[in-house]
Length: 483
Image (cartoon, rainbow, N blue to C red; front, side, top):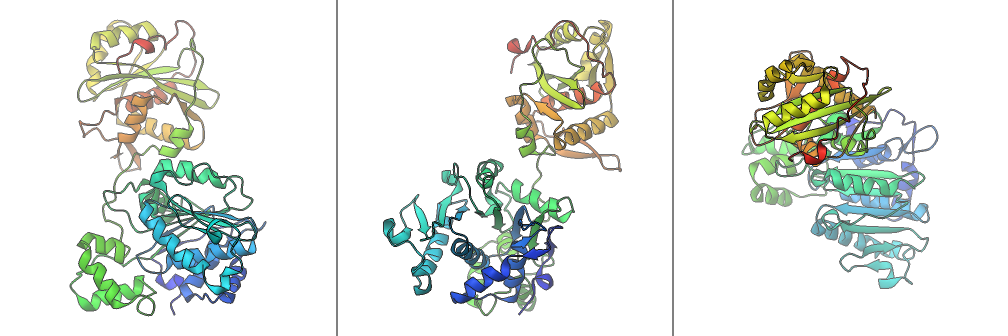
């Protein structure tokens, strides 16, 4: 039998792990006639690892595994064992689609009907403790524990509280919104267990969540997660029979004693070549889908009403899209925190100049990137004595770094404006220099990132003149702005 450490392409364990609750769970399963391969024994030990105070060491367990390796069997056994040994445990098992959730429920229902388990199922409850109708797929235990199954695409899981174990199957299709909806269901639990599992995302999948989790784990950014990836060493010629089966034995420890050759060949014939690499061999695409460099969940959490009307900003900045859509951004400072907003938007350049002149006066700095189409406004603004700061790539790199570091530290807020949110969603990263600096990629004319560029430059301009000024409210023109 293979050990997990010998199989895993990536294995990242939580730093705080000093003990594990696995022996009790394993013994409970063994008493029910359920046994595990060596690699499953290793993985179960890591999933249930605990810290010095007895809490689960991993805030989140994430697994990127090929099809048919036995992940559902292992996680299902853990769910049953926890329900049996910890009365009143609620397990929520979600998949992206209803079909997957139903297939998992059927497998778990078969376990619940085994003679060894029947005595622990609440036969007094509706359906003899097993509800099979759509939307009510549930297994109820005599001790008050229960396992519920449903599809995220149908909104399942939202509204539950005190969830002791949350399973996010098909994590490669889990959206940021789904995570925002489901993770809070564990907040009231004393010691929740959160498991995410799936195969590498397809280009058409909303794989931002899974990709970010993998990236943070494999680059060392996370010290409190468990990340396990079983995958082939690299792409190879699928027609090379010897190499095909050699690689398969490396990535699928259930072959051939649990999963036969016929099942593997069925997938090989029925899937595209790219899908075989992902689904059968666990290989992530060489060129991963790019996402916004500004973290989505943190951005949504940073929404705030901001300073009161009448408070003048520390700085302004102007940017313009390929289609000459103008955006004016502003930044307010308070102690170590910053608030940013789009304060004017439109396509009338003379009107934009007048608006900026009226609000900035001669004291509030206004930054404009020298390479932006908005640079055509610089002569007119300077002629009106506006304090113009001509930005360059170094300023853009500094502004992006400031915006992201402020966001990650909880020091940045914004007004949850649609145009700014859309710009964040559409932004992509480009390198600036060779020291790790970056800016926003402007190449795609179909994406208007001007609102994000404007507030980013306003943030860096605020560090040049950090004294807030008083006078005419800078945000008075927002109501008449053209969106």
